[in-house]
Image (cartoon, rainbow, N blue to C red; front, top):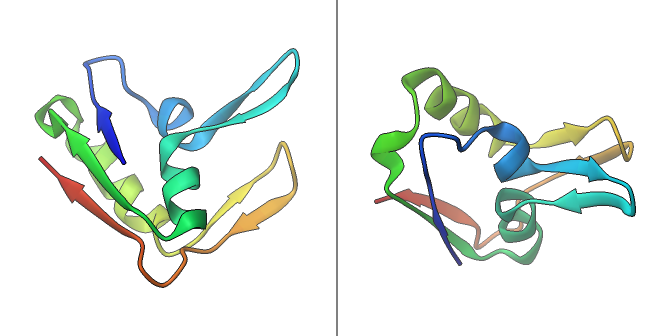
Length: 81
């Protein structure tokens, strides 16, 4: 799975966010669940603090809006490009 980062890319974009129809999962959660490779294209747009947060989240994350704990499937990996 590929995702093109922009200067506006934030955690809500990558993890997911609440919408009127329910929670919309982002590419990070989708790739983690499916055990896919997530390639973050144009990752130079992401701030250093954002990269640190992403590194911490790949070990597992909690989504308060849904009450879910997401663990990465065995083949998941994230690449910065």
